[in-house]
Each structure stands twice: as C-alpha cells, then as structure tokens.
Length: 145
Image (spheres, rainbow, N blue to C red):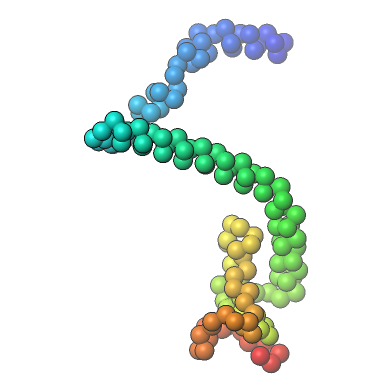
C-alpha cells in the first residue's frame, strides 16, 4: 500500500512540476538584493574566490563544532549537575552578585549556554583586578573574606 501511494505521488503532475522547478534559482530571484558594482574582472574573480573560501571555511567550522559537541556533552552534563546541586541548597537571586570567600559570581538561568549561567567565578585572591568598591555585592556570607 505504501509503495502504491509513493508511486501515485511521484507520478503526479504536481510532484513532477516541483522536481523540474529550480528552487534555488527562484529563491535567489525572489529575495530582494542590491547588486554589487564590481569595476574589474580581477575584482569580480577575487570576490568570488573569497566568497567560496568563506563558504568552505564555514563548512569546515561546522564540522569541527559538530565533532566537539560529542566531546562537550559529558562536560556540560556534569556542569549542569553541579549548578543544580548549588541551586537545591542555596536559592540564589537572579542577576545578583554574590561573594563567598575569594569567589565573586552571579547567576543567570536565562542564559542559553549552561556554561554562561554562572558568571565571574573569580577567585579574588588571584591576580585579577576587581574594583575596591564592590557596592553591588548583594550578599556577603559570614565566612571572613
């Protein structure tokens, strides 16, 4: 039955006209664009070469990012577990700056990337410049600084 329906669809006039239709060409013509004014053939060749190279680099970058996703997943999962453990024990106010011992940080659950949800986990004892007047610290715990 499925084969029969597939043959019916493939043999239909609607499907055949779609197959013959050059979708890419039609889309490019449909999109409103500004034509670049290229003065010389050399400039046109260089631009074309650069655009092709950009496209190839983007494809390569995409491949690398996809490979890294596999390596990143266990780290991101562990990061999420650690953040969830902190949030279970300590209800943090969103976008407030916190200080604990030598760490200054802030929590933003709306950040898409899990690694961006805790910002500024800076140990203040290291060689990192922090302003002396940290008046926007919302909470200073009882552990001495």
